[in-house]
Image (tube, rainbow over all chains, first blue to last red; front, side):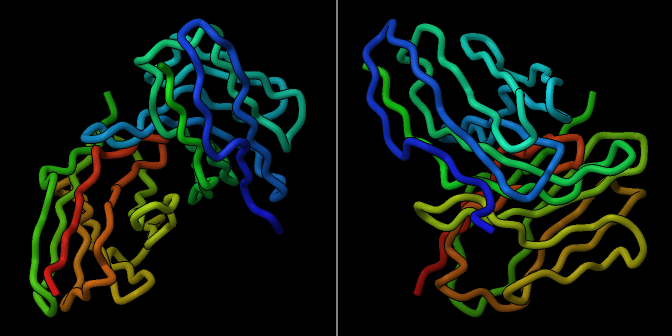
Length: 115
Length: 108
């Protein structure tokens, strides 16, 4: 199993540009999520999905869109990049049962810089 | 509202010292609790987890954590740290909530 994969690993964008961060998992996990990690702020949840076709907002959703057309893929779209979106982005997946999440498996991260 | 608090932002220890990192959560129902570790330049990995049963759980690399329901706590411990334990440690509640993290620096 490859686990959770993310592409690209690094990206530099200009303000106003749009792009999609890719995330895929091969563990058949229903639950997937996107976090951003900023110094001193830990991990903040952007969006999550409990299954194909179902997405919901997390703590910091503004400026980001997601979709979940398949169990495996959960791309994160930046609609119009802003310097405040400079961060490291982590995708994660988890098995869930009866409303409980089991441990999350994290991807290697995407380091995004917006100039 | 559900939350996870890690009050120690940065802990500096010498090798062989004992470690305890605090984690308190706010949630009235049944919880699953986790500790994750992020080594420099790497992604988060699971250190240990508590679902139910014995409140003292053992994880990888000699780490353990104790779930104390009355104190809403899930503190991480290690009797003797090594330089390779230098990392950031995150406590998490299964409701996809993470603490802000504790950076652990070990002096050789």
